[in-house]
Image 1 (cartoon, helix red, strand yellow):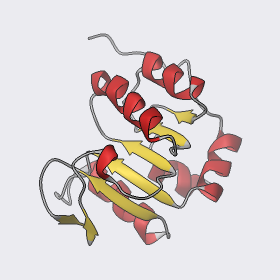
Image 2 (cartoon, rainbow, N blue to C red; image 1 turned 60 degrees about the vertical axis):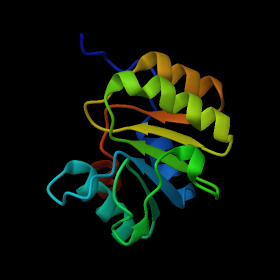
Image 3 (cartoon, rainbow, N blue to C red; image 1 turned 45 degrees about the horizontal axis):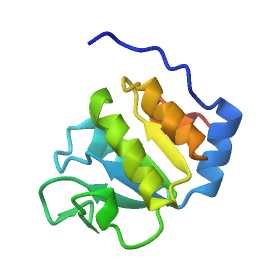
Length: 141
């Protein structure tokens, strides 16, 4: 598969507003392995005050939080979805976010770009960030 350049993306002012407004972040692909980027990023976001919701196919708890198997299983409002999945999975993630109806931010981590999924999310009213690390951007702001 060829790498995509993100044609749908938020600028740094929009990202600053994202961090100021979101409170609950579902982390798709949050690994229990502390050496993985998903774990480090989620721990950082949790440490700076965000409510982290792990979405992972295994485990009962990660970072002290109940693990859900899918976005659909989360029984309360989710402000942002932070995605650590392969680009091909983002179409289904965008659909799941749209179906929930409460996700305001669709964030694909560094190295993850799917412009079709991003456009679908943006068209449904979500802010979109692709190919950027939430931890790095938060620290820089």
